[in-house]
Image (tube, one colour):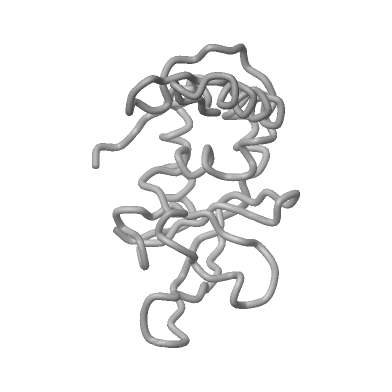
Length: 172
């Protein structure tokens, strides 16, 4: 697929149409930028290899953003979490664990999503993740404080911080 700014915006809008929470959609749109190409170093090949990455979202508060690239971890995982500014070695495409199959998934793994009070404590007793929500929505810090407290009080169950927002997950 040949990528351009209009196709990227259309792909993001298609995903946003599947997001159940208007607060999330509004927040994402407030952080979106006109897509532009940034050449980013690729750490897993020949020295000095760089690939084009389209910047699509910028969270200035954390100096991070979301980029799209068909190279590197794309096309299977084309949406990545990236650093916006800093020394050249900090501006690379990073590790595979920071690249996702869909834009919205990258958003929920980004620092930007912690701005919203959409976080809940989830409890699970087996290997299901995230488990069952057991709290109301709250901010990121308060939710994690509750998770840590519950982990200390009940060592037989697993407690996690997650959200209850539904969105489209592409098949793998």
